[in-house]
Length: 234
Ligand SMILES: [Zn+2]
Image: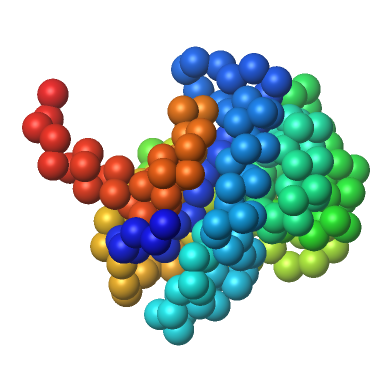
């Protein structure tokens, strides 16, 4: 089943836990496994880096889809990583670097284990800072420090970031470039196809309810965001 593509599908996950929690965007391990198998069978999961290169050429890979995680919680290692490794699906985890090694979050050792297995990492700021609301020097510091902290763990350059809560302004974009990043994700759903701003990449949050091939195809096509816009505001 192939639906028209409204925007390159970049999917966002947060936690993957044995049982999905109602409030935060958590997906249960069973559903995550199901979603990954569908993506593996009917889509073409590509790495974030491949996606950035493709976008620069304005040529999205056929059935291409990108899997991203925000925050860097420990379940990404214990529950999501085994599935990704088994299904051989590339993914990038955007980590709150100030939280590394604190309860509930990834440790440096877990990050290295996943790096060795091909998982990519990006920054999600130092302390999950909502960048538009902090002073510009503080935002620049958060962007720089988190990149450096992650580079020290990974022993390789960190080029990508996802803005906490998607928050960015023209000034934040400039600071992000100045801090050495090559692309940045927001949390907004996508709507327009091309050209794509590499410093404001829109993403689609995946929920527990996405269990069928049709639901996943609709989600990846960006149809949901159009539907949402057409609905009267309430
Ligand atoms: Zn976050």
